[in-house]
Amino acid sequence: MSSILTPFASIGAKGWVVLSIFIFIFSCKKDPAIEDTGNDVITLQIPKGFPYPVIPSDNQPTQNRIDLGKKIFFDPILSRDSTISCGSCHHTDKKFTDGLQFSIGIDGNQTTRNAMSILNTAYQPYIFWDGGVPNLEQQVLAPIENPLEMDFDINQVVARLNNHPEYPKLFQKAYNQPPSVYTLSRAIACYERTLFTGKSRYDDYLYDNNTLALNASEINGMNIFFGENGECFHCHNEYNFTDYSFKNNGLYLFYADSGRARITTLQSDVGKFKVPSLRNIELTAPYMHDGSLATLEDVIEHYNSGGQPHPNKSGLIQPLNLTPQEKQDLVNFLKTLTDKNF
Amino acid sequence: MKKNKLILMAAVALLTTATIFTGCKKDDDDTPAPTPNTEQKLSFHLHTMVGSNAASYGVQYQDASGRKFDIADLRYYISNIVLIKNDGSELALSGKVLLVNPATQEYELGEVPVGSYKGFKFLLGLDSATNHSDPTTYAASNPLSIQSPSIHWSWNSGYIFMKIEGQVDTTLAANGPLDLQYFYHVGLDNLKRTIDFSTSAFTVVSGSDYEIGLEFDLLQALNNVDMRTENETHSFNNLPLATKIADNWQDSFELE
Image (cartoon, rainbow over all chains, first blue to last red):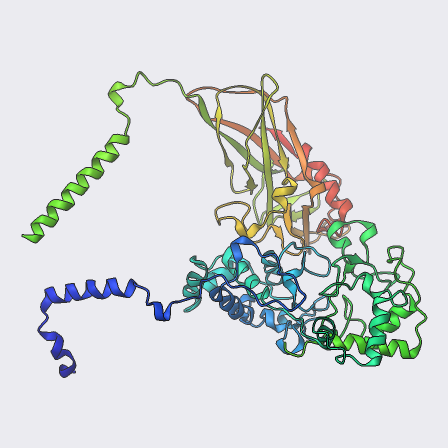
């Protein structure tokens, strides 16, 4: 010990002050060689053929924000008894769904709707099957407060984060503010906006002009999908295979879940749900708002039948009279929408 | 020596700063006698009642039919407060939002010009823009920030205009214990109501802050609501019941 201290022993009190000031000044200076880029606004890596998403000006992506949001997304600190995180129902190995008909929340509670994938969620003009929430930032509140999901009070979540050994520093770094309802909602949304999917065999075929990416059956399925004999493309269109409209697809004559009408209270919205993206659909079973259809074959069978005669049913849902081979081709095409990378 | 020089510099700096600050101050000697205040503070003095009793959480009350109930939560939003001047023009107290609860009687509305007013009116609930604003953007001190317990719908972004919760005796003879949790969550754009006191004249005089005394009666808000059978609404799932309560709001208020 003494040998380590010896070189400094002769400095004396005055010397220490000067040295401290010296160190203080220099530690504030940035070293250009190891400059911290954590707060630089990042350009998100967008799949080929996709537009750049609209991002709120107060929540532009930086690495610090994305890292923070990701950490919270997978942290059960958000739930009352610290057992449920966002990742509990949005698994990375199931394209951010959970494979269940209804997700399981706190205390083993079964929720009332099938968990949607949150990939490409940066493009969603409103959130949830019924579109009840206008953006990702405000969406953060819903699962935390839902008694079947996390069953917690957002202000208590914020108090927990402020008492955490790491989070206050991470929030300060990312948003220059302590954990708050505002920064919490922004951090999670910031991470979610980085989750893109768009590198499937279909994309190879379409954007990379790789005509060998799809086989004959898949191409035939694609033609049915985008043609008037399948009619699928009317709602499942563009790069994310959805027009985000609310449609009653004739699943039931009587709906246990009123869907969009829960938000608007309009009779004409009963049984309408947001058209989901079909990307990675092979890996996101079961299907529909209530997960009532187990396989893609079941889904094709439903649409082929023309569905139930509900008064709000979309006029596009009519019997299709597809042959068994055509149905198989359609299923084969849908399986080409699986992202190989993510 | 160096130390002395530093002290001197600091003194000069301080003196300069002091001069600047003093320079900004008004010289009292030169101003004429104080003019009368042109504005005074206006407040609502608001009592939350259950019939003739003051409302309080956990206390047992009886509804109009004699049925027992208590209150665990009773809060509501008042916004878009407008004063009507004598010439008929309106003075909007823009941006003022109150979250009323039974324990609080004083609600400051801000400074208003002295003078005579024909009356006032306000919204019970929120205008559409405020109703659908992002609650995460408000400072914790703002009544529009997320409250604990929440008075905002996170699954259908918008505020609950009036939240009434508690327990009620649902026995047919109304002679049993409080056996059911009731809740009335009244919101949605269509359920905001203008509470009109446009002919309730008042005068704000210089030198004296003014309080408008008001009473809100929960029994009036639940007029014609059978708490035995009509005991829950999230608005969207039981719109007729929510509408019935909203339509009672005007008659629930009276001047104190």
